[in-house]
Amino acid sequence: MRSKKSSISSPAKSPRKIGVVIDRLNVGGVEKIAIEQVKALRKNGEDAHLVVLREKAVVPNAFKDLRKGLPIIYLDRRLPKFFRYSFQFPLFSFFSSFHVTYPFVLPFVVKRKEFDYLIVHGTYTCLTAVALKKTRGIHFSGFIWDPASYILERVYKAKTLAPIIKVLIAVAKTLDAFLIRNMDAVLVGGPAHNKFIRQASPGKKIVTIYPSVHPIKKQKKKKSYVLMATAWKRGKHPDYLLELVKAMPEIRIEMVGKWLEKSYYKEFLASVKQAKAGKQINIVGEVTEAQLSDYYARAAVVLQSNDDRGFGMPALEAAGHATTFVIPKGQGVCKLFEDGKDGYYTKEKDTAAIVPLLRKLLAKPDTAASMGERAWQKVVANYSWDNHAKALSDLVTKELKHKA
Image 1 (cartoon, rainbow, N blue to C red):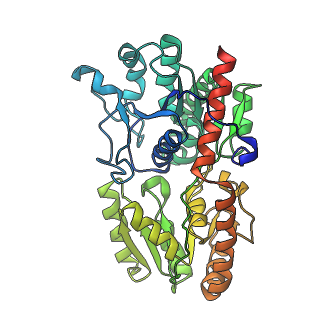
Image 2 (image 1 turned 45 degrees about the vertical axis):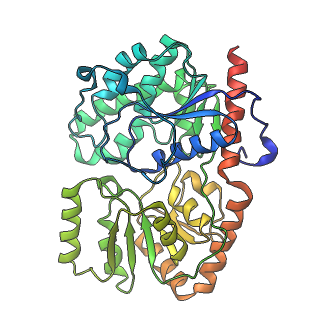
């Protein structure tokens, strides 16, 4: 396992300028991971920077507390104003025109070998990384959390006309394969998409490097609520909670996280009122990292109903706070813990399975606490950001040596 100390070598004596690349600074697990990677790499002796393609984001000033003192390079600040223009493509929540145009214009404002290596997050972000590799000789490895074709199948298939979605999925698979072929190595947080990656580019190197968290040092007294924490949007299906409340009227859910669409938030709030579920569902909204940590530490159990196949950060964050969890099975994070001992794995939105597990954990707080402590011990032993950074440094060392 790449995250264990025994498999990691020391970083090079002289720091390398490593860019951890994202498309925009939005509120999400990927952006949070990228920020933590930069911090950990710098602590590990590397000259790491967060490299952001586009400064204007969907959520202004995201992760303000985490970004304090972080070296950030906004590449489009170097562009004339005209070339920064962008619009969101119809149908898509995040795919925008800059994802297509920036690969053509940003290489003109990046110096040759300005970075020794790039660690890139996101399918569309990798388009610019490929352009920089071909025109500026800057090599990269990319994290594939979820391929574009998988997202289309999962999120957009049901609400798009069949002939259109078939074409889009075919184009997305071609794009995924092109990007995978041009990476030095494909980085993953679990094996969920490995079969697809191997089909897209047989023989391509796949390297598993699990994300990490900052585990608490002292456990806190638990309360009797179920925590659900994410950046809330349509693809996260918060409407499922109404079905859950109907099956389990005694439940108390704390919904923590930024709502990315005000209109959707209003729709959901109206649905909660209509269902008379205000006592069961408390919509907390956006919180600071310190507040989020307290919510995780105080929760009786963390519930994740939406399948984030590429990894699934809520379970790892729960474990880092000595809190057990109920999550969809098959996510990358499931490889780190044991079903039935650290937490529970169910099918996605399997109410018939989820409700008895939540009732059991809420009725037996000592059992829930012991499961959370067991998961916490695994995080402390194996999944520190220091280990994660050393794994990335080790990867960069090997790839640069191979390219020399």
